[in-house]
Image (cartoon, rainbow, N blue to C red; front, side, top):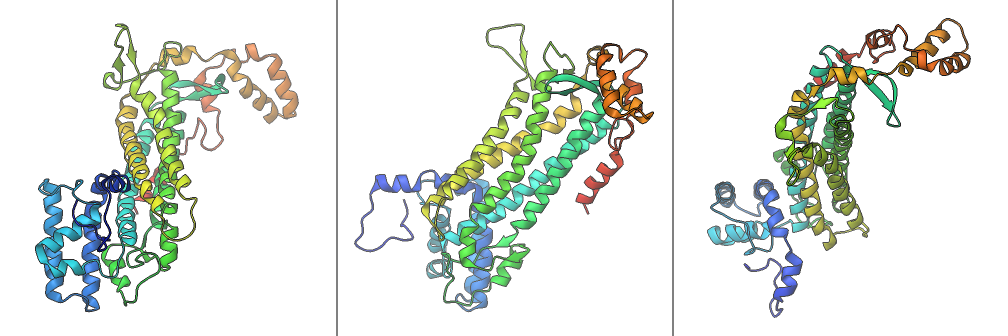
Length: 431
């Protein structure tokens, strides 16, 4: 391992203790490394503004930071166990190339605000990806909702309840993912605050140009209080996990529906072959494994959020416990986004089995229609309800699913899905 940034003369380090302290931190830092380099460039510019480094030193440092980023992308520089973490690697590289100028790069900052700003930039990128996934899923659902509606049983308590349609099913998930896209945007706006320059959580005795780093890094505002910068670590990460979790909840319920609809007992849906796998022992089987793992993926995201929350049983100020939040954050976000990325193609190509769905609509499912019609004609609803219940088995006589849906005139129901409203909400996201 290279020299430790915090090494003091006369103090020996123990390899086993250092291994425990470092853990897999340096490997996780690969995900945040380029953001760390970007923030380092802005910090160097700010140091030049207050005379801590010269203009020439600033130019040299920025050149070497760009070279490090390029070497990292190309695989010529590997972040590994030679370094305690990514921050140490940056300083070691700059010191090796530029001597004293490299040793000045850490002036006025701590690894505390260094990881905060790198993580914050990474989180903004991930929320942009999340919002994009949700928009694409919503677009596919809206496209399929606009296709001719096929009759589909509507369920409550997993029991056949009323007549529904494939268009209503897709419209429901379309609106859900429009909302999820908006939530991703709103979360991104909330966390869009620059913590760089708060150092270890109490500021420094230098007039750091924090307005410059805020603008240079593309943040909407400066996170003013150094103490709050530390308090926000974990809090902001949890907000991102909650935004992702909102989308994954909808994905889980969608996957649950498909898990049921693809069974032989339902037989409502056929999946593209590549979204199924075979059994290792039963030659007759094709299993909806992708759908099942989509269903399970919410647990991974929720567990990651929970782990971060449990780490936050802390007083104010930085505590080393927070190091463990990086693994939870990375694992939960990357897994959740990978799951959502599969949904658009799956939803676009899944096929409905109209005959099976139509056959599953039984006469009693029209009883609600009968009760509402009687109430509209002046019969007190509770009396109409009781009469329809008695005659439920014959409620469907002379009725079709198409008639039931056409009569469903409440806004958003079968006769008018209000897809134009949902399309406009989706379009507003691009504004």
